[in-house]
Length: 58
Image 1: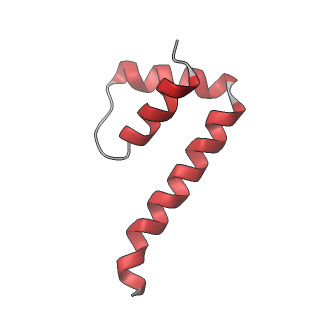
Image 2 (image 1 turned 90 degrees about the vertical axis):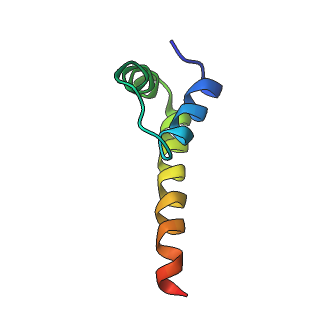
């Protein structure tokens, strides 16, 4: 099982590269039990989306 540090690193990497099935299962399992990492996932997704839309708004 992943700890929070490993999970947050993998969540960040998942935005830039495809994750393996095993990594995806490990992340989801950790997220089911960890509210802090679920919050981190939402925050990273928001920042990623905002960064993608930034060039369109300039």
